[in-house]
Length: 165
Ligand SMILES: CC(C)(COP(=O)(O)OP(=O)(O)OC[C@H]1O[C@@H](n2cnc3c(N)ncnc32)[C@H](O)[C@@H]1OP(=O)(O)O)[C@@H](O)C(=O)NCCC(=O)NCCS
Image: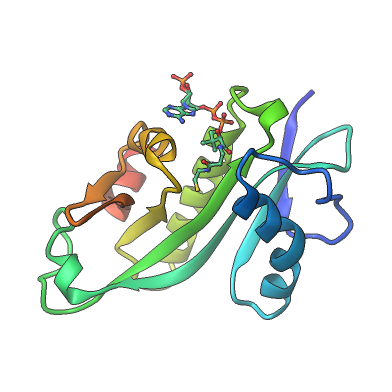
């Protein structure tokens, strides 16, 4: 059994997805389709290669870190101008599949996507909004650091990503 990570498709079954966080389940079920259609977020879906059910996903969007916050970022920004970013707005794995490395695979997929974007347009950081301190600990394992005034918002620089991938 292997996992496949694919661009959003209505052909995959999102109904059974349960990561243990209602807000993330609800968003996938009820909002991801419209968001995709309007080009507001890009979502990638994970499934087992033998099944049609979604077992993981992430969604991301282009964002800016305000100048006041950019001064906090390691080696980027001057504190005078906003910093361009990819925001991983949501990332989740079905409870039955947690602990199998899928969360890590989804994160690496998202980071590789950011690197691809950075080869075509200016991009300095990837940021994530962790739901809680558990999720924060997950991101910290991958080199993300918290913003000083909001520990649940974390960032990693493109330089760090390209050095580690
Ligand atoms: C957080 C989440 C995405 C992790 O997914 P997962 O598939 O279980 O994670 P993986 O199996 O890829 O784990 C990768 C590594 O992170 C570690 N890890 C997993 N969850 C962790 C957590 N909450 N805190 C700290 N470390 C964690 C694992 O032990 C593993 O370490 P290892 O490589 O040394 O073995 C998943 O638990 C989840 O969907 N939770 C509910 C939703 C959520 O909180 N999303 C996060 C952001 S909004």
